[in-house]
Amino acid sequence: MSEDNQFKFINSDGVDHLMLLHASMTDFAYSTHAHEEYSIGVTLSGRQDFYAHGAFHHSHPGQIMVFNPGDAHDGESGADAVLNYTMLYVHPDQLMPSLEALNVTSPELFRIQDAVFNDPLVKQQIMRLAQLIELNHATVSEYESLLFELTEELVRYQSKQSLLPETRRQRLLDQAKDYLQEHYQEEISLDDLCQVACMSKYHFLRSFKAYTGMTPHQYWLNVRIHRGKQALRAGVSVMNVVDQLGFNDLSHFNRRFKPVFGMTPRQYQRLLLAR
Image 1 (cartoon, one colour):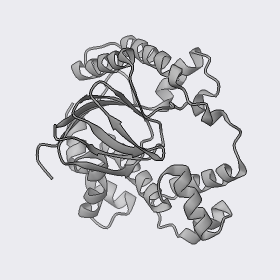
Image 2 (cartoon, helix red, strand yellow; image 1 turned 90 degrees about the vertical axis):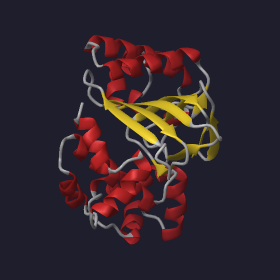
Image 3 (cartoon, rainbow, N blue to C red; image 1 turned 180 degrees about the vertical axis):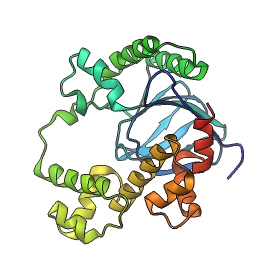
């Protein structure tokens, strides 16, 4: 992998659970993963290719990319030119007040329909918010105002799918997801998951992959990686995180972490805590 791949994460000092990523990629490829936040970004140059929502997508310069919390996706540069993009990671709790003020039905289920779309105003708002985070001199009210304006525009792209009545199958699969989230520090057998979901082994595997975009093992690893990320941001030492998550050693943790964040856990922590 080339050293030309660069990833710069910046925490917002004005609002909790708001992060900025500037990425430049040549030959780096993200492994399949999902975030717990809304990931809302702009492709600046090059082309980003990724698989999400059961289809392949291409984001060209100026286009918006959106991944809802839990949306499984990968990603890589899809052209000869260097891929540059800016991404905001916004925790659902940060959008909730705006969604409620905008009278969005079931704001806790809010999802954006399209993974890629064109909207110059949304692009402008993303870049303005990114600039506030980078310059680090805005007030809380400035962040909140921009987040509200961005949310107001994103509501126009709301998916209606999440508002459909939940089926018994979805409830059972959600039980399995909850179980994996609660027991992320443990080795979980497929038989245990099938019992939780009340499904046969192969029916469960097919259903879980169709529902989440990941295999149960990939989902479990994804939860572990994000719990590790939270601990690193809180200042827990890398080796303590390795122990807490039950990885065999630091090398094992590095191999799982880097394909999701583009850098090692130690590099990620140094970058965030240096600010």
